[in-house]
Length: 237
Image (cartoon, rainbow, N blue to C red; front, side, top):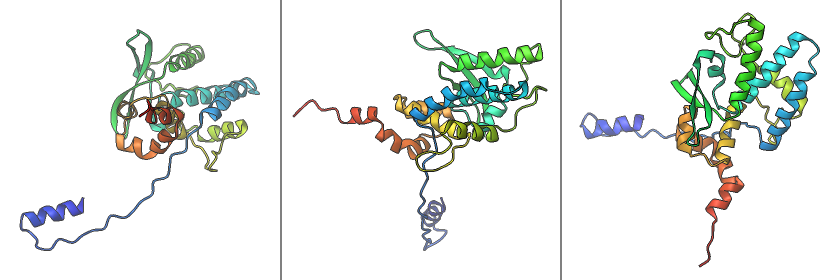
């Protein structure tokens, strides 16, 4: 940006010899996600994790954690956006074939946007709604969907997330990096790319740029078997 400013100043005659500012090289680390195999291990384990709760309080904590993980990995919303997602922020649309899809209206660092969720999210949200309706006797649309019994938002799932993933044996990836709740957003991105979703549509749904998608997930995209199949189609010479 500074180089552009100095070049502009030279064109206008404000300076005669603009300085050249070297752009530092940077290496962006790939984002930690959860592989498809480990994801199946995790969500299968979470069912047992909830059932084995020792008391009512722990059951509630694990139940909410389970659905937090399932919803974030199938919507791609940010951790902060999930924290403030309220019941009244949930609506729906339909696919070309007439199937229902939930829409979250979220507010985060990129402003307000609408997020179209994977089809399974409707089931997860319904379970949370039934649980909360029974617990509070009446659903308050102004409440966050991830809330404490008193209706206040759950500030963080970080500790419970780490405990659950450690118990399931998927806390660390093959590179040794520890997974955190934000890994769910990256898991969503890599799974959507694997399914062939356009990076333009994916970027819009995630509230980020195409460049960011390509920068962080491009390598995984090129290594995906579906991508390898598409780019090496051969009809013969």
